[in-house]
Image (tube, rainbow, N blue to C red; front, side, top):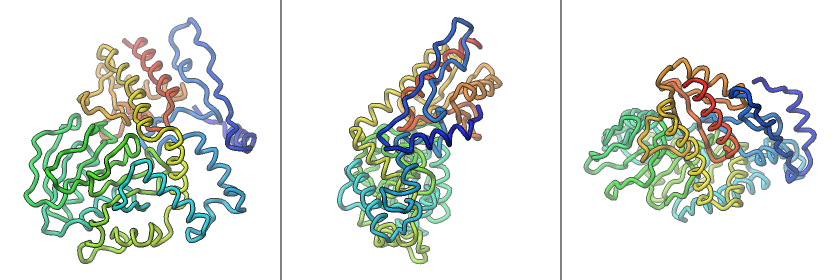
Length: 403
């Protein structure tokens, strides 16, 4: 469905009043008694928005977008846009400090950990971690559960004696990890965005240093930060737009980068300069700050986790009740609360129709990753239950029509 740009602009101008004013969601008309229609499933959203199931960049909370819209022109009456401010000025310094403080409160980050807002995406961390924690001849361990942990391993092999301690089948978490003696760290991906495999507890690595890529489930649940040496995450899934990567690093791990480490790949560079060695991703940091504040206001991460569990259950229940029409290959013990991949085993051609008809019904970005095909619903924190219910209803209707 194509959006009418003039309507979007008009809507934005009409609601430029205080952010507490919200345009009510207009519910779609009741379904008729005719055959099930995909166009009857999705309620109308403010500003003609669609339900966006993109894996990232992903949906952001509407009230955050509205506040950002107003601050884009004149931040809190300062006379300047939030995007025009110097990162050295007191206004943005306040924005950055509050964002960090709120994140620390959300995750209960211990005082002996540094929080850094970096650039380069989580993929840059694949190199940054070994540069800071290991030498070229040091052993490191990687657990592979999907595409992103495999990429991290491949990068690790370029800079260390990286060992694949365990390799899964892209639908479960492997057992019997073979960790190297004296390895400098154990790296894993807490949630595989493509395959939809998620760890439900902190891995036991026998006292070794644990490093986690939490890009696609960051601040989606409570985490005991003290059990990790490093947690990093690309922010464009749950907390902001593309452009900022958050790294939480234990202080004793900072300052021992190997000789020859590029300045921008040394955690010490950023820790000593409060993430402002060079111009940081100001706009992305600002949006993250708005999201952190919203999550705290709404009950923190226990409340976020409960909501995410309820949303995921709706979709997995539809898949399980479809009598095999839909299939999710992931072991139920490690199914992701963030990314729900599924296929139509009986006829792959129906998957194309599903994606097309869902888009016409107001639900977009449901195409699976190009490497695995099928469909994928990414249901991050900001995806409302209305969107989940709309997709569930559409899935049931589609299955009934094509059974």
